[in-house]
Image (cartoon, rainbow, N blue to C red):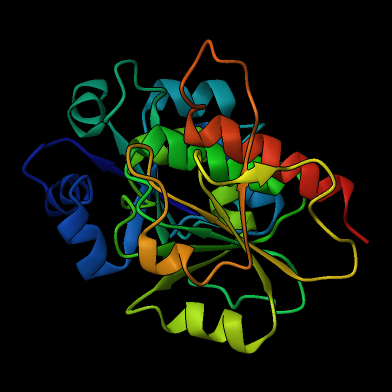
Length: 260
């Protein structure tokens, strides 16, 4: 492990790291950043380690013992000043650490339930949905092209280590959705007006694909037409509808209770 000190904001490494705050560069380079050290620790426990690690001296001295597993798997650690890290950070209160990870698309398990996200454009909602999916053992998540970038910093803060522990795939031109149909999934789509109550709707001996639509418009009509059943969470008349992330958590809990 080599510790390399960087003193200038004009350093090439710093400029490259700063670009990763933009979706365009994340896509071009196949990399993303994580600024929450608890997420970094949880990822390392799952044997997922950063490609590069940038820390302040204060943070490193204070947390070296807790970070031992992460540090021992780094060839180089870049030591930066507080002022440089603050410039790089997307957080209001930077923790003192930024990790760079490589994007890795994992294969879906077509023997298990699948969550299909259609046009989820709020990063906080997306992150919460991913976290809830992990909590209820739903490892397969598909995002269509209308969804917000999963590696957006706000999404990562909300999703936490779910980013590393789920089977996440990106559906281009509905190719994955075609495979879902070919693999004989029972397809459910959320619909506030036409959907039936969740109670007792899921069967144990079936593979389920749950389509969750955008916050404002719900699932696309073309996807909704492919659904075997439309579902909805019944509430009082005091509110029009639930936030998509809250709805997802309730649906996932219901699925979890009806798993094999």
